[in-house]
Amino acid sequence: MKDHLKPLLLTLMIEGVEVNKVLVDGGGAINMLPQTLLKRFGKTLADLKPHNILISDYAGKSSQPEGMILLNVQIGSVRRTTMFIVTPSKANFNVLLGREWIHGMGAVPSTVHQKIFFWNDDEQLEVLDADQKEYETGMYFADQQITAFVRTKPFDATDPDVLEDEEGVKKTFCWDV
Image 1 (cartoon, one colour):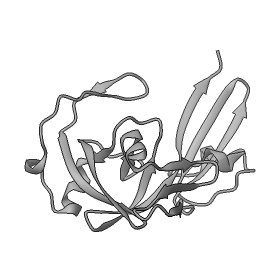
Image 2: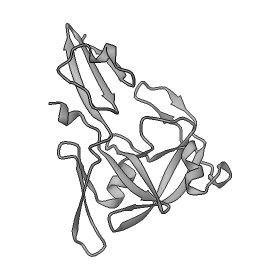
Image 3: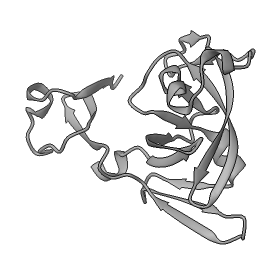
Image 4: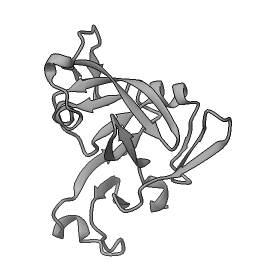
């Protein structure tokens, strides 16, 4: 079951720069870019355009992003100008591509198959495999508590103490009520 918990992470070209840990998330309505990545593309806060978007996280906490910017994103042979909302914080991924990009590309992302399917300008199907080296995932069930975690190094999923012993483990606790 743990293979189905992996996020869909790609390596893409953005503004001609290779960017890894690009999260394709059909649950996200917008495309997000951390402010720290602007420098990699030769951009600054002065290049951002104002907007009236307020973003909310999964817990409902709202925040005001820095601004928006249009950047060229290339996947396979297809290049598309994409609007990004620039946020001041850094996440576990470098870039988030949400439904705006997915639907605009006509792409079909599959976390189960760890691939993204899309049609190029010649109406040929292209398939890009996800980066498998970036994350290993796992889940443990203890009493009524579910612990989900993501880490960047290989680990022994059969070791029940892996959550306590290892550094670099992001833990999320969900309670069954």
